[in-house]
Amino acid sequence: MSVTEILFTPLLKADSGRPLITHYDDATGSRVELSRATVKNWAAKTANWLRDEHDVEPGDTVAVLLPSHWQTVGVLLGAWWCGARVVVGSGSDGAKVAIVPPGGAADADVVAVASLHPLGLGSGAPVDYSDDVRVHGDDFSPWEPVAGSAPALGDLTVDEVVAAARELGAELGAEPRVLSTVEWDSASTVLEGFLAVLAAGGSLVQVSNPDAGRSAARRDAEKVTREITPQRG
Image (cartoon, rainbow, N blue to C red; front, side):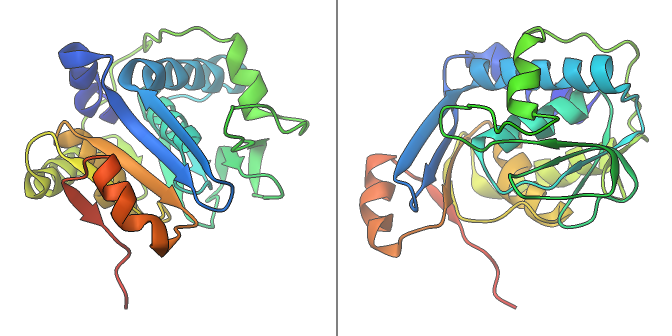
C-alpha cells in the first residue's frame, strides 16, 4: 500500500470530521482549517489529476516544490496515493510533474502552479494546479498496489517512510495537536513536520511567516500539546 493509504486512511476511518491541518499565514492574517475528509478530497483529486492528465505511474517522480501549506498537504498525499516518488526542496530531479508556487520554476515534463491562495483560487498559470484538480473526482482507486519497496520520498521507500514516521510519531504522543513552523524542504522535515503527525493520529497547526508576538495566544487558542521548530545548525 502507499504512504497515503497506510498513514492517512486510518484517520479517515476513525473520525473523518476532525481537523487535520490548520494553516496560518501571519503575513496575510489568514487562517484556513481543513478536516480529514476535506484533505482526502483534495488528495483524491490530486491523485486522479496526476494519473489521468499527466500519466503519473508508480515510481514516477513528482517534485513538490511548495512551502508548508494546506494545499501542499493535498499535493503530497495525492502524489503518494498514485504511487509517485516525491522529491522536495529546490531540485526537480527529472520529475514527470513539478508543482511550484507562483513565480516558481522547475525542470520537469510538466510544471504546474499552485496558487497558495487562502480560498484555493487559481493562479492563471498555463498549467494551474488549483483550477485543474477541481474537475477530478473526490475518490481515488489505484490501478495496482504500491509495493513497500517502491520509492516514496527522495531515496526512501514506502516501508522506510512509514517506519520513520511511526518512530517520530511515537515521540509526539497519542493524537497530539502540533504547532509547527518547520518548512517541508527535505525528506527529514516532511517526516518530522507532517508525516509524524499523521502517524500519531494528530492534527497540525502550521504557521507560515510566523509572528513571534502571536505565538502564546495561538498555542492557547488552538490547544496545542506539542511544538516543532526549525533546527538551528
